[in-house]
Image 1: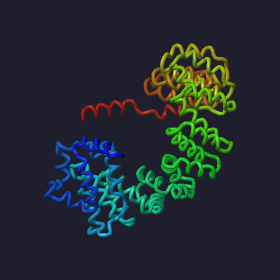
Image 2: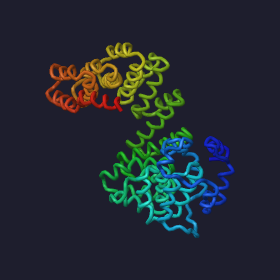
Image 3: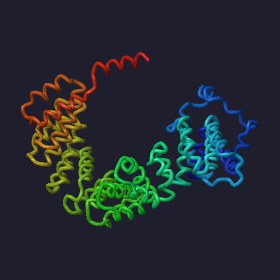
Image 4: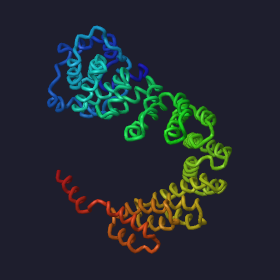
Length: 446
């Protein structure tokens, strides 16, 4: 953040740029800068919470000014002072006390100063206490500190259940400071809950902080969801800065499913800002290289004119690109003119493109007309797609009219015994309407 932007943030909270420089220059002597002769002693939490001058939103992760906090963290850095006078326990106590400080800047500075004094053996205790106190600022600061001094140890403690799950602040800091270490740790995990939970945290954060390293690492992985996720997120990061660079990086990838997924992600991203360029790229690539991009392009064309979208989709070869485009047309058109979209569906010949359009239409219209959506879904050929869409529409229908939904599932002649059993199970999971009404009355009473 540059100084002018920081100034704007500080002025919004009634602070001055001078306060920032005072805090930075004083550094580890900050406690003297916020001593009782400069600022009132912190009040008990109960009194602070009731103080009208301090909005409650400042105590939540959403309400805290993340930009000011990030600048404070950058200015203070993570180096521990060689002349600390506080013990680890005193530093942990200071974190709790600082959270009661009414000044945003003083609160951030005091918390980060105390956190920077803690070593790796003190962080688990401090983090547990911060979570108990719902001290969102300290939680983020402590996670960043742990990622700085002992990321592998912290991640191991989490994987072994010795600490509560670590959040975005930890994994983001780890990915920025040592992405190779983060990727190595993730690769060494066995398949299971921990790997599933850390997949997005590790792969997405590394891809966002160092997309080229993420692509290099992805090329060493076997084909699969980890490789595809790392590639698509890294390309999305590159594409946000330079779509041409992202496209070139995607085209350099070795042939395979991950390369197709990467190209699809890049062209989909380009379609959001340059529709004509996305259409051109899709036409230049081998047939059916892309799927999601087709849906995005088609939906954008519907916003201009449904006829334009239909004309473009008709030029696509049969296969996944055309199926995706028809699905995008149906989904967007249904949100704008249900009757016109339904009329179009009636004109489509049987085939995979029609199936994609009907499925998208039914899913989009189910919240408004679950009965009609269910009837449309029932026109799909028997198979996994029809069962999946019917499960969605029936699940919504039974919430608004459970008797009608049950009657349809019981008596519809087009259902197989297997489908009927599956849909009956979906209905059995519906919430109790009477219990729902009772909860609503209770909430209204409160």
